[in-house]
Image 1 (cartoon, helix red, strand yellow):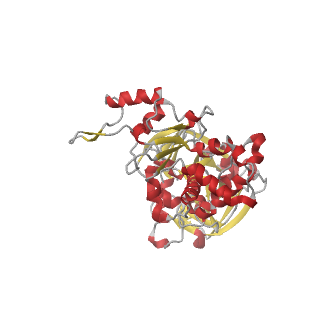
Image 2 (cartoon, one colour; image 1 turned 90 degrees about the vertical axis):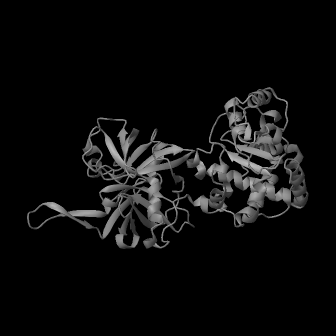
Image 3 (spheres, rainbow, N blue to C red; image 1 turned 90 degrees about the horizontal axis):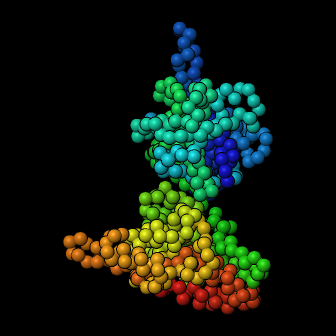
Amino acid sequence: MDVTDFRLYSVTVGGGSGVLFQPMNKLDYTYILTAKHNIFGKRSNEIDNRIDEEYQLVEVKIYIPIHNETNPVVQPIIINETYFPHDTLDIAILKIQYIAGYQEIYINDDSKQVTNSFVCGYPSYLQSKHLFSNKYTAYELKNIVSDNGTTYKAQLTDENKEQSEITGLSGGGILKIENNHISLIGIQSEVSSYVSNGQIEFVPSILFNDIITDSKYNGKLEILYPPYMGGFEYLKEEIFNINAGSDDSNIVFTRKFLQNKANEIINSDITPNYIKDFFKERLLLNEKEKCKLNNKAIYVTWLEFLTIINIVKSKEHSKDNLEEIFNIARLLYKDTDKDWQASEFLEECLCFNYENLKPGGTVLIKTNVKPVIPRLNHYRIERKSILPRIDRLKCQFNNGEIGNIFIDDASGQIREFVFDQFNFMHFEFLKEYLLVWDNEDFKDFNASNKDELLLKLKDVYGKLFSL
């Protein structure tokens, strides 16, 4: 995914713009997030012929680019049936018939991080001159100039951009690429006054939640999470996608077996959204990165993790025992491509709060990349390991140079060094190291001896967790 995909999520709404968003539902409908003023027209005052009377449109045409097709889909929208405006802000939600293929977008809670973001849409000066495919444009944002809490003013990278080149982008998304998904930062709003020097105003996307929770809409709108947050079934195709290269035939059945075993979790009452609400920042190694809590990688990993735990414990889990699992094996995500055993990364592991994790428990670390070297000691750090990098951290910890060594400053009780308390391993150890590297151990399993495979997996994974 790259910035060219922004065009596919950008639509016209009347004379303005909007952005497609697939909410957390069973794919019955799709939303268009836009500016409220796009749903209004203006007409001349009959007395003095001034254009100063505004009225709500009964119908508005929306042009939607469907993937890479040249011709857009045109949807006339009856406003009274589909229109959900904010009471005071210049934002609104339009509810349209479901359109497949627009699920890779999520709300970014941190709307001030506009670096590498673009305002996308269909400016008026292009709408009247070109075929639809040439009307779209995107302008890069440089920084936030000011904000009043509900509306932000942002500077475009091109400070010479004229207002005539911006008009018509109202309702367009402020979009950026994060974690191979489209992150929606905000919606361009109507400017409060004439803005020169290539500046725009936008409403943070998080404020669309005001519309969702407005009592007058009485549950007619779904929360603005991606569909996969509502159910693990959307993630099934992305789990246990391991490959043993020339030896892949050895693990073909094992891979399918694990993917099928995940149905126990998919059919349970556990959902990604429940995990997010239940654990919150405890899912992240860096608790300050709460905007990462919608990251798909977290929940793909959780589906794999819970599937493995079901195998180990020979039972199907539900919401009631999630905390029990979390107290035995802690699963943490960090959005990084850096080596998980680099000094700074291990310091984060040292300083994290592992409250209620049992001594001897396992801390599983998930990052965006596999460990840099395919050796056991680069995938796993056993508790009380005698390793130079761990010894160095322990010395700094004992000297009070890093981390908080005291449980309570008043009592003077000392915390135990976490690498002496818990086992640490990269999550890919459970797949790459135990399945791919040891693929010979799985070559004889097939449908005829699947019960033996289950016992094998129970033994392999059971040795890792104090269950």
